[in-house]
Image (cartoon, rainbow over all chains, first blue to last red; front, top):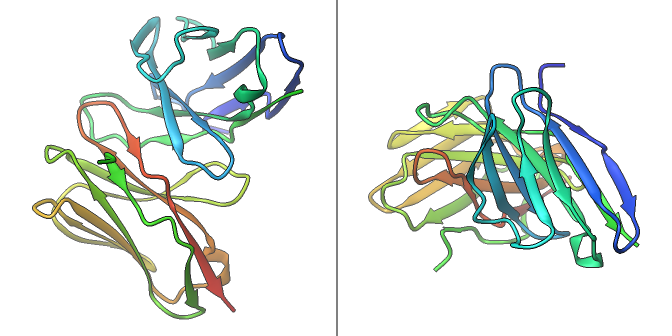
Length: 115
Length: 110
C-alpha cells in the first residue's frame, strides 16, 4: 500500500496518560502535516514537518503536544497528560513538497478517545 | 473573516440533479485549490485540484475557479446517493500551508 499509513486507528487513553500517533507518508513524499478534527467540525492545522525539521507548528497547543519526523521512521504526534478535550480524530497528510503545486493526501486517521 | 468559507448545509438535491457547492477564500494570492470528499467517520479524499481560472472537468465533477472573485465551486452532475458526504474546500495560499473550510454536507435524495 503506497498510501499514507497511520497507526493506531483507534486509541483509548485515560486522563493523564500519553498518546503517541504514528504516520508514514506516501512513497516519494517528504512533507508531513498533522490535522485535528473534532466531531462535526472542520480540519484544524496543527503542524507541518519535513525530515528532521519542524517547519510550522503554529497550530499546535503550546503545552503537552509535540511532533517529530526523524530521519528514519515515521512521523510521531505525541500528546502528554491527555485530557478529555483531546478526544478527536487526528489525520496525517503528506505532499511531495513546497515548490510544487502538490496535492495533499490523507491517511485513515487515528481516533483518540480519552476516558 | 474566515480564510476559507463554505455554507455548512445540508444541501439536499434529488438523485440525478446537479449539486453545486461553493467556497470563497480571503487570500488573494492563493494559487492552488482543492476539493475533498469526506464520508462520516472516514478521512478526506481528494476529488479535484484546480490552479487556473476557468473550469476543470473530471467525470461527473467540474471544478470552477474565479480568482478575481476569490471563488471556487464544485459541480456534481447526475448526483447519486453515494455522493452524500461532506465536501471540503481547501486553499493553499503560500508554498506549503493548506487551509480548509468547515465543509458543506450534501444529501442526495433517492
